[in-house]
Amino acid sequence: MDRIIVRGGNPITGSVQVRGAKNSTLPLMAATLLAEDTCVLHNVPCLHDVFAMDKILSEMGMAIDFTGRSMTLGPNSVTSHEAPYELVRKMRASFFVLGPLLGRFGQARVSLPGGCAIGTRPVDIHLKGLESLGVNIRIDDGYVVAEGRPVGADIALDFPSVGATENLMMAASRAKGVTRLTNVAREPEIADLASFLNSLGAQISGAGTDLITILGVDELGGTEHTVIPDRIEAGTFLIAGIATGGEVTVLNATAEHLPNFVEKLREMGAEVEVHGSKIRAAATNGLKGVDVSTQPYPGFPTDLQAQIMALACVAEGATIIKENVFENRFMQVAELTRMGANIEVDGNAAVVRGVPKLSGAPVMASDLRASAALIIAGLTASDGETSISRIYHIDRGYERIEERLASLGGDIRREP
Image 1 (cartoon, helix red, strand yellow):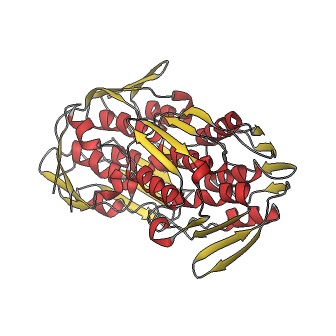
Image 2 (tube, rainbow, N blue to C red; image 1 turned 90 degrees about the vertical axis):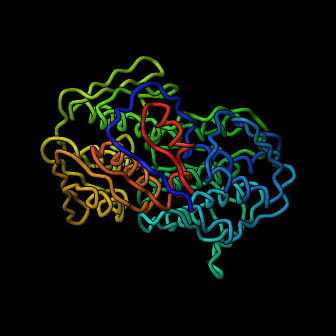
């Protein structure tokens, strides 16, 4: 099994292109199930999760051509309404096919999902919402079996879940009548999905606010759509530059998608400049600890919590990090501690006291974002070599990250 080897001491400096957002691409791919004509997605990242969704849709009969960074999807050939366990178990986002299958066909059989072990992330919000749309749902041998054409309804989510918001948007886009969703997720990926659906012919308004209104339509056509930049990848590269005393400019980025994050970097003492689609971040004479509290958008992203923890390990003073989205997302702490970090965890709070240096060590990745944190920590380590195993996690969300960091001056490579 492959591993990533990192030797610290080199500043990460230069420019790097941000790929399309994984967390937009996956629901967009699923949403093509609603269409009656060919759809083309541009700026698609080459990631294991994208390949996995490709396989799920292909197994349903979808005709897919993925060339370069463009993906052509032909939904007219879809014959199956089932997403089997052997495919769904590896990736939670595969559950996104449930809503569009119901919207178009009125039936679906989808395995309960898998993914990173960062918390329970229950699907009950999805199922409760779909039942409110008049869909009959039962659990049968680990599968969600759903039947019935969705009918518009007023639905208030118990929590602003991104996945539930997207699944309900897709199901309601071809429902009979009007659906009003309140207490919904407001992430940029929600607005990207709404934009895509509207270009198919859907009538959705309010995406990005607390209230989304969907007027169901009888059918949806085809379209071309460009995926928004990956804000989490942008943030990861910016942190890598700052943590190593370097200077990184991310290209094809959208600073408006990272409001709380950018301000937090500045609060820590980093220099951050925004010029259109470019974000430049540089280390200054010293970084200081801050308070970080993850929240649904537009708050600090939970998907950047592990990375900023790695940065806090080498900042002066104490950083208090509160994880309010997932209950098991401090899995990187034990591995960072092996590298010399000073971190104490109490429930959903972690106190990180900066140390003069980290040291290389053999560590194990537990999930996607923890993998990125360990790479950042390895890049900052002033002595020794960091060997990161179980790196299949990193390939789910970062495209050839070791090659791109090496192009920025990092001493990092992949080994079998």
